[in-house]
Length: 269
Image 1 (cartoon, rainbow, N blue to C red):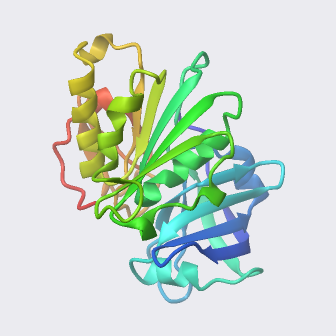
Image 2 (spheres, rainbow, N blue to C red):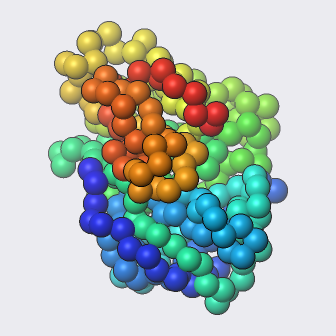
């Protein structure tokens, strides 16, 4: 589901917290974006004077329309995210958003299964917080404990289970290995993370549910991660192939029905 038109706003940093050696959590005051945003959408943030040409896409990890604020869960991988990690309360942030499509679990859905890999957990936190009347199970995976989001940032009403590739916390192995225990319990599966994780998630669901995808009653929606330049659908740098043709992650996505994805592209993420 695509939301209202995006706007340009100079947001203000409320807080910027390092959660682990890998993860950061920044909160921004931006009433107009917070009022329009929906879980699954993202903002495009300028890299400041150090890198003024290309914006960076960041999924929204918290949306508080009442307080006029949003939050972003991120890790430092380059100049743009390094700049973001060094911001202090009161600093301005040139922000465009909200952008893209959002999660759309059915109205009658009571049991949400949320599967997040690394910082891919961000939009799923926002989804869980938007549904306090629904039972939510969060499956959070990462390479090591440093990549897991602390429980203090997660909704209190959600059950949370962890997996790490190196076994440093929670179950050992991919978060996808936790799916069998919860798939039948769920009314809908929403996931976000690196594309190989999402593809593995789709394969595991196919193994758990022999019903042809087009006949399944349980929706499965994936929020894709992709490198993008404009964020507005003009440059076509984030195109993926679907069963209904080429789609742009920044506009038709980032949220897609899993059954529509062919995985016949290489995003490098």
